[in-house]
Length: 67
Image 1 (cartoon, one colour):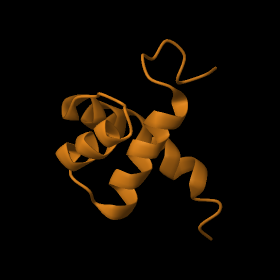
Image 2 (cartoon, one colour; image 1 turned 180 degrees about the vertical axis):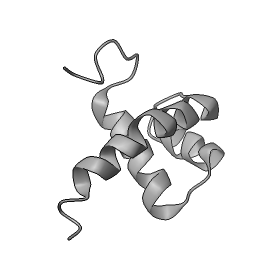
Image 3 (spheres, helix red, strand yellow; image 1 turned 120 degrees about the vertical axis):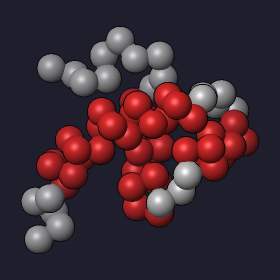
């Protein structure tokens, strides 16, 4: 099952935003500005929902590599 199916934004955009938020602690509004500079208009509240939805799954899948 694809967790990104039916999303408005591409998988790579979502993963990029979640990864940068988790790794560097960038605020949602700063991420919104960074994405806007790259031509992707997304609201900071959308990024918040992405982090809530995808960050736990990313951590679970990457935990094996962190050992």
